[in-house]
Image (cartoon, rainbow, N blue to C red; front, side, top):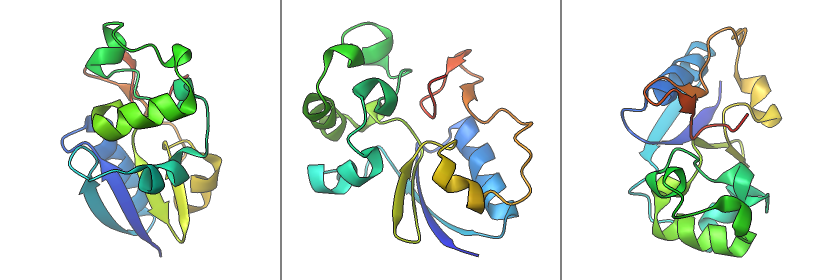
Length: 138
C-alpha cells in the first residue's frame, strides 16, 4: 500500500474511475484540486519531464479546443508558463507516489500501483466530450 497524491479536476468522470482503481489496489489517496493548487515552475516540471507540449497539455481545455492555443507551436518553457497561469491546460491526472512524479494514468511507471485492473474499462476517453480526455492523448 502506498500513499498517493492525486491531482485532479474535481467531478471528472475519468478521474473518479482512476481513483477507484488505485483504491481497489489498496492505496490511500490524498486528492488535491489541480485547478486551485498554486503551481510554479519548480513544482510542475517534475511531473512533465521536459516532454513535448503536445504530450503534456490538456487537449480538451477550451483554449486548445478553440484554437487559441496550439501546443505544437509552443516550446516547453512557453507551455509550462501557460499551464502555471491556467491549470486547466495541464493534462490530468498528476500523481505523486513514493518520490515519483507522474503525469497521465497510462504512464508505465504507474503500472505497479494498479493492482488487478485489467485495463478493460476506458478511463482515458472523456465521456462528456466524446474526444480524447485531458488524461491521455492517443
